Length: 189
Image: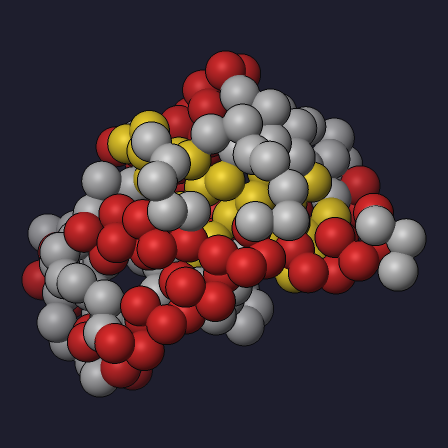
């Protein structure tokens, strides 16, 4: 599995009630909390500093709400393949019960299937658009981390934080950093 080496911005949706409660909520469709709305609105000022080719969004409510607040007035391209992983019988259970990513949860989606779905969907997007903004989920970011570093493990990406993703042809060629840092460098500050 590899990703087309074209840059994009990735944003994990804003906080949801399930995030706040520290429970698994992959395929559970929930809205943003008030804090999640504020996170998405804060992303708007960062995103407004550049023009983006398109706004690509998971069809789940939390991502659509985030996208509408982070890039108001922009048309959304809904992409089913970047939907969050289905955790099956573990949906709504405490995060402490989440198994290793590579394990298949009871009645849930296998890790390899999830990775293939996400990578295929992102490659279709990158074939069609230059520097899109992608609003999706922490599981999708874990797939990006796997492609970049060889492991999905590491700190959970923050809610509503725009990240600059520059895929590389080798793991050491990838760049993943806060969009604010990338903008500061490209603007010569």
